[in-house]
Image 1 (cartoon, helix red, strand yellow):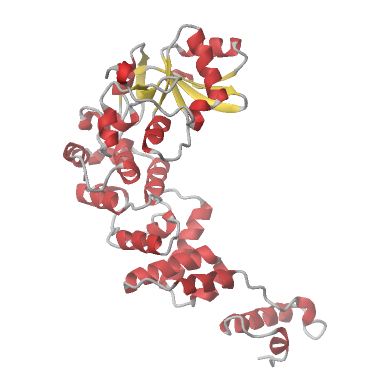
Image 2 (cartoon, one colour):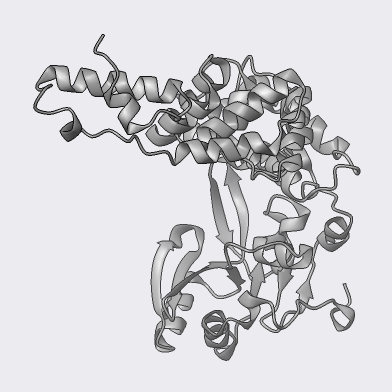
Length: 394
């Protein structure tokens, strides 16, 4: 690319205009080194979508990065120095700065790297063309591998040999489908070389930890519409390898129903929609996420009324149960049902223990309160305090 005609990141882009980030850049360039913004922050800025992390890449060796930035009054933390990464804290904000690298040896999970002064070598060891675009501290684009054309076309491809990229790190198979769901144009479809390489390297998925698989799948399921990517996973055999016996047929209708009702995606609800064997242990989900998964599943396929579910389990569990029931019924629910769910989740039981004492005490008190609450919920919260207190004991 002719750097004189290279596009620019807008100067008012928050991470580019950030004085803390620029202080890191100034320290390294002032010492005679090059430093670039790279990866997700550049990709997302060019696509006009939010940026979460800001990473930097440089030709300075890790020890030099530490010495240079500390002389500039910044704090350096060797968080991944064996792989060339130093976290620089500037004005209280952390920035990962990684030395240009090339892979010497890989085993599908981790790599032995050698440091480089060539940004093109650094770009070639990355995963996807969209993620190998760099920007100078003043926002000028550096595009060693032509990723900008793919980005503008929303065409998601591995860098150079797809099979080699996958064998360097088998997690890239799952990252491919996650990033495809987030950034690719569904109308463009999948890159045929990518799908062939993925299907030819399924065995490597067995080497991945449950935590890494779970992290990628939960992010994928949280995409605006993950249905095309999940279909690609099914067609290549990836879905059966990581979540056996699941079925993605309901994910598209579920995503469209969420959009029709203007509801945010809930990856746990979508995981329930996949069906199959209990995935919570296979994906090593947290206790909280595991509880939510089973709450949504029990509510969706049980017989309890939605308002009762909202009161007992919370509005989100009831909303997800409503969506899943509606998808199976192939009918979009009325917005009034959502309003009723929200209202039910905020109801307050009008009876307290003191209202029943001293006539009822001890274990009988708890039983009486539970019985009255069940009757109140069964009445759809319409029974008043007086009506409840007048009920005979069973």
